[in-house]
Length: 342
Image 1 (cartoon, one colour):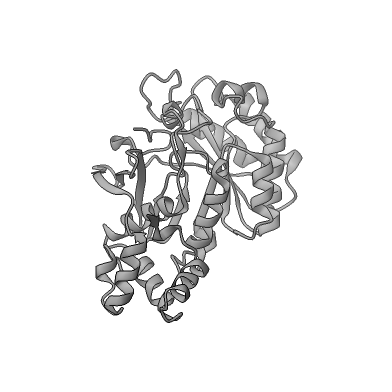
Image 2 (cartoon, rainbow, N blue to C red):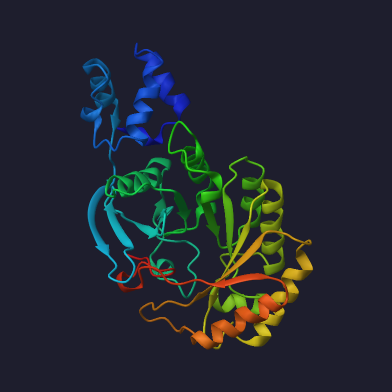
């Protein structure tokens, strides 16, 4: 049975028309799906029984079964676990921060990239998540909170751009006013650097912000952190990311995991400056997020000292680059960057 969240608004309207349901009812259905915290078709109480019966006969409402939540004692971050119909484990993270509340969602079961510092990379890739499974992570997180979701990060388990078609469709629903209606500048897609897909997304009109997981200023260092599954050079990845930002008029985020003794030296910082200044135009909106490597079981990588991270950031700043040392969220519940895994 098809998942109703896999339907686009046009497909839902077509279903209504084919089943003798007034076309305007599709707008009512969308409001229940995305705005009213419904838990099933029976909650659609302003729709005739005939309409609810047709929906129940044709579609599943939830395909992800809620299987648990952990709340961080440090910062209120919540890690949600779900089980898909085929038994696959899916994880999402709710990130409350001041007046902003974001949900970080997974796009695949396991990850085919396998970054060496990341727990998700140790989970064998099983399959892509559907459009509906991605949207349902956001909706179920929203339904469990009294706070309005204001941002979405496609930064959980998986490589979003290796699930391009489903991710692109989900992005449309996330920003569409008739569906989730979240502002484009509050939606970020993270990628390990698949250049053709970055270029394709840039021309698609999706409009979300892009974050590239660079992690090194040169190819030799990057190979110590990111396997050969990503076959593009750091220069090609940065150029594609900047091209995306220019095409969409959005900020480019460069994510850089700091691993002690690997890529956190002053020489690495100087090489990163050289790389970026060689690609960037004047006054481009680029932010570098420096992320201390988080603890992952059996990992060969360690977090640098705060002093080392600050020195790295300060060198970038002195050369006119916008860089911040990002604070980990949900570290005590294994929900921080690089910690999601089954």
